[in-house]
Length: 187
Length: 109
Image (cartoon, rainbow over all chains, first blue to last red; front, side, top):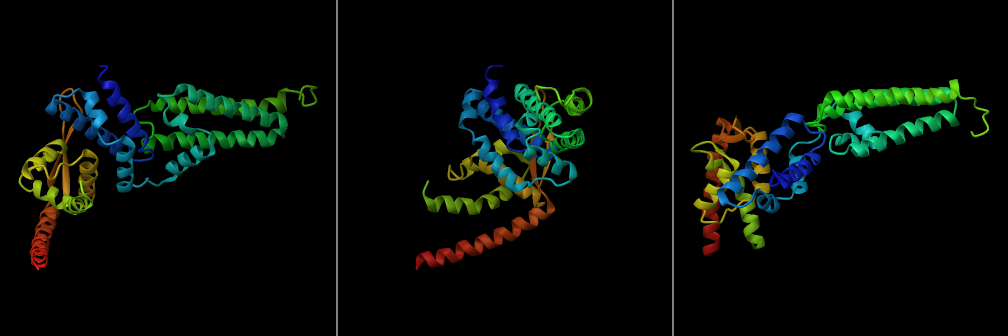
């Protein structure tokens, strides 16, 4: 299995370079590349890791495919792209299974930001932002799923986690206005 | 590889692929191997050149793919010519013959 690690890393980079492409297409491209590298290793008798090292760099290959297959359009993908741009989800949501710690950090920052907003602005503004966050995050979750970014991550886990964090954000945004006295000395 | 060689190969790859797939369906690694053998090493494609070229031809409707499930391995994708691909190959072949004939005349002075 150790021999498969470079292949897995290679395919992960290739997959990352094909964000926002159709999930079935990405799966097809990855399977084709894996089959090629395994066939090459078998035909030449070289270790799989060596075949991977000699292969076209995954970034280069992904760039070639991106030219052929432009980003799909649609509201869900647009929402996914928007949320990435806003930094709500960031790279963490793209690689939710590969990088759980980054995902947690991004969500801690998100929740902390909402709490701060709730403390420093009116409850209405904070709640408005939290509700917008819930909508955007849910839409982005669906967008990331439909665009194949999360392949082969667990969609149920992502959507549940997105929803939980968003609801948590709502509570945090509401907390200062409704439950914390704003004239408290430490504010 | 010289700059001339690269340019000539680049222009000929799609025609080579169509011609290669005229007789039977093939998968990527097989195409690379057969092309290398039949051209005495002149066309020694890297997979980073081959697969995007195959996908371009597939997207243009000149090739179609068939996925074959393999046990314990990722599925294998076989490419074959479509009727449109056969027409395109015939046209490209005629153009190629015209061009090589004309080039021969020019180079011979």
